[in-house]
Image (tube, rainbow, N blue to C red; front, side, top):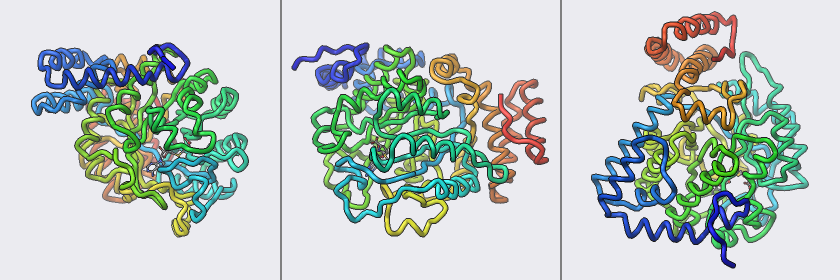
Length: 475
Ligand code: SAM
């Protein structure tokens, strides 16, 4: 059946039109060495307002070293202009690995009979949240397999209530993002009412044919239901959504173009693009061998993808997880990443009971196994400001209100002092002596970059945090 490309359509095959992707990739191949066109695209990109999927596809296809150098340096510049040197930290929290789907790349697939299945009780969730608060985390992403009987929406809602209710010592989880399977408008509304931050759902692959082969059984097999999920989420009132593909499942240039078309679609229909884009790469796991997947990408291509995304959608946050090594994370942070996870466990119950990692209930092997304190310390040695800020969403700056702030490059004015304030909380409550020393110096240096008025208020609040007479200050 013919599907005419239409970014405003609500039909998956029309806003992610296979023909449009194929045509864009052909165009990119034909023009990847077309210097005048590449220069024109770069000139537009330097305005820092983004590129179309087709323009970005040309940059991604280009292998001329002098153009690639310009792409990487522009990505770095855009990153600094929009996000400064802040890096927001979060941790994933796996609530249950029961799953009825048959995803061939995920060890949670229903046919895996030897993986240890676990669904946490509310008491166990409490233990996990206390362990996460004791590390210093303020922002979580909850993860569940899809299982209407074991993991119904009521379980997710009850768990959210539990997580938000726990205040251990000076700790608090102030923002919970949710990564659960595609669901109904009604359920999205319930998640919105429960006070979630971002609703995250990875497309896995935008190639319908690959999608159907990779998801042979279960509700996730339905490509249209999955691809149209973000429209239902927005209809349910969730205005911060996070998209992504699992690189390695299909050809990366196809995925990259599909990802940008999805972003354009959300902007065209709802007036606001995705809040974040995640760039996970396929990892080995319990019964998953990455050698079985011929489309896995190397580190150079990965870095190029991050840089081209940064240029194409300058105002969209970009997330990197502990699926990547310290070295790779170091490389791509500067090319456009704005959020990263630290000290992560991908097993159910792994934070409070590390010994429960065996028998294995993990979703994939983590590469970056450092503690959160090591990650914070490492970020600061590279002059990044680790931030635990959750202010925007709690001040109602979500969806188009956040995007307006971001597009006007104004996030610096509130995000910078907020980052310093939340870093100060971390330093006082959780940091090792070395990390604290490093952090205090960084805060002193960064305070000097704020306007006198903002610096005065920030200093007063920092003092209260140090005296333990207040927490949770924000602009
Ligand atoms: N069950 C939810 C769904 O169906 O969308 C999502 C939660 S799942 C716990 C989070 C993500 O982990 C998936 O969307 C997938 O992209 C990723 N994932 C699954 N298997 C993986 C693997 N072997 N390596 C890396 N990431 C994987």
